[in-house]
Length: 128
Length: 115
Image (cartoon, rainbow over all chains, first blue to last red; front, side):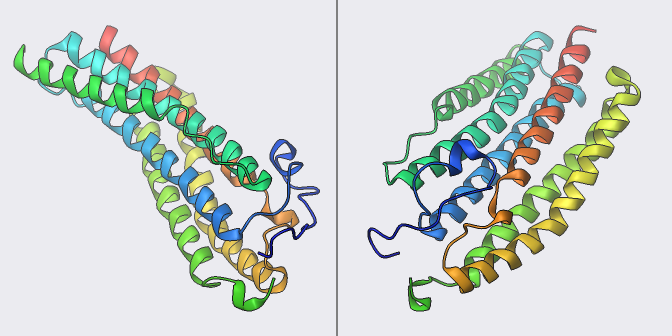
């Protein structure tokens, strides 16, 4: 991409809230952004599977702690697609405007929540 | 933008298509799981949710290939992704379906844990 090249921009592309800004970035960056979105979606599905399995398979843990861990994992699994979409949109906008990429807003709560779920599972194993 | 400036024209769309397909397969498994596990909580809604998710997943698996071919064609012709089909409809739908499966999972966990 030559510097200063004004590509025709985003007319008729969904969502307008992203494509009405700036100019076309390097296509490699847009494709990487798309793959990052998909990685968040798969992360969500993994979190949901873990949360549902804990309860659904009646794993031998202390029941209240097992339920708490399950709910934490499923709530994280619900937050992940929100992060996937909003993060994709914010990153694509930043790429189009040539701004630095924003950090993923929900990355910190998601990692903290995963640790919490792990601690709950551990306690649930010890206190059954 | 010259053709030479286009980095691995075949491989980027290909890698992205593979990421779509991995995601589609995960969604298919999750949707079938919802149809199998959720009837106790959601009744016929569970089958509807599972079926909708499965149809979306199978469609994604197919559309990933078409998207990659269009991406490649556009990159070779114009060197960018600025075309009608370069929008984010598939992303929005995928995030939505994942969120709905998540709500189903929440219903299952809360119902099972408190029931």
